[in-house]
Every structure is written in C-alpha cells, then in structure tokens.
Amino acid sequence: MQTSLLMQLLQALDDGQLKVVDLTTPLGPDTVVIDLPPIFASSPGVTITKISRYDSDGPGWYWNTINMGEHTGTHFDAPVHWITGKDLPQNTTDKIPPRKFIGPACVIDVSGDVSLFEDFLLTIERVEAWEASYGKVPAGAWVLLRTDWSKRKGRDAFLNVREDGAHSPGFHRTCSEWLAKERDVLGVGVETVGTDAGQAGTFDPPFPNHHFMHMNGKFGLASLVNLDQLPPTGAIVIAAPLKLVDGSGSPLRVLAITP
Image 1 (cartoon, helix red, strand yellow):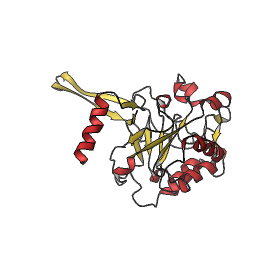
Image 2 (tube, one colour; image 1 turned 45 degrees about the horizontal axis):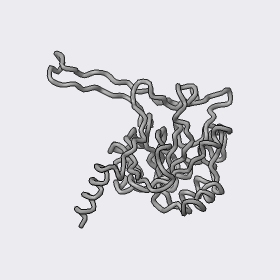
Image 3 (tube, one colour; image 1 turned 60 degrees about the vertical axis):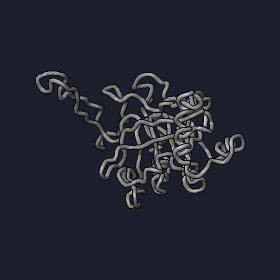
Image 4 (tube, one colour; image 1 turned 30 degrees about the horizontal axis):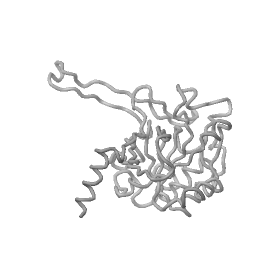
C-alpha cells in the first residue's frame, strides 16, 4: 500500500495535479549576506573558485571550490545557531531527525501591510485572524510569512539599512513565543535576509524570533522566494539542510509541493 501511495504522488506530479515550487534564491557571488556591526565577525559572501573545467587540471571534468558562511542565501537555522538553543538535544544539522524537515505550509500574506509599513510585525491576533479563515495552524507546520520582500532588487533595497539600522518586517516577540509553544510549529520562514525584523536588535530580548524559536527547538528559513505561488494552506514544504557535523545551519534548496 505504501508503494501505491508513493506512485500516486509521482503520477500526480507527472500529470500536473501537483506541482513543485522552488522557494530558493540562486546562490552565487551576488548573493546578499546580512550586515553586522563592525564589532562582530561577519559572514563572507559566496566565492566560487574553479578546480578544473575540461583543462590540464582535469581534462574530462568540471568542478569548483565553494566558500561561504552557513547562513548564506536561502538558508536553514538550527536551534544551536542561537545561544538559547545551544544546550538542546539534536540541535545541530547533522543530528536533527530528517522527518522534521518536511511539514505543511501555512502561508500568511502580509504583503499589503508591508508595502505600507516596512517594519511590520506579525502579531498573535493577526495569526488568529488567519486561522479564522483557514483553520488552526497545525503542529509540525512551517509558518511562512509572505511579505514580497524577495521582489526587491539590489543589495541596498533588500537589506534596507539606514542610519538607525536595517528596516524590514518580521515577528512580534509574543507571536514567536506563541507559535513555538502554543502551536508547536516546525519553524518559520521569511523572505528577508534573516528571520527577525530589521530593527530586532533593539527589541527585548534582542532578536526575539531567534531567541524563542531556537529556545524551543524550532527552526528558521530565511531568504525564501516565490511564496506568492503558494496557497494559504495545502502545500507541503521540504527544507533539508546539509548534514554538516555540528552545523548551526546551512544553505539549502527549499521545495514546496502544492496543488
């Protein structure tokens, strides 16, 4: 019976009843990486160096050396990434059970709000209003915040840094804690460079989405794209990071299967 179910899935993909949506931004030298204050160590951009390309270093093959931080481009945040999750079991990319990389998607569209107010924060009340229309956020779901931020062109517009720091949307601290504890989500996903709002360094606690999500063993997905191609419910997201030993996260290919 299990084989039959898998074959039905493949058939549905082949005949167009289901489609695969790529939620991943291309990864290369132009990939935007988060800026940190100069007192902190920063993550490098992506560097791709040729090893050989059908030449004297390798006449029949092409391959490269890649160099980047774990949290580059569309990437996964493991609980160990934040100090609040550092002592949890199975908190690194090589130890997280792979079943936890797959879950239903709850897509909350706040793109209209963000177009009017760049520092928009998702609240519990806003999620409850979404639930009134689409049903309760199920345990083990990916909550994806659609802001259309990924449609911004260029580094400056994407990071949106001013004299007082970055400005971008995210989660209210109470909402992050509530999603982790009261809805038991797998984690959250955003279109911005990180899972916290641009001004989150000034919040209490600082960077509350990282603080509460990772404290509770939940995950983060950042720099997602194409969320406008997903329905509010009904899609399944597969977000499997590289199996890095003791990894705090990694770039990954995020795929959604959707009607």
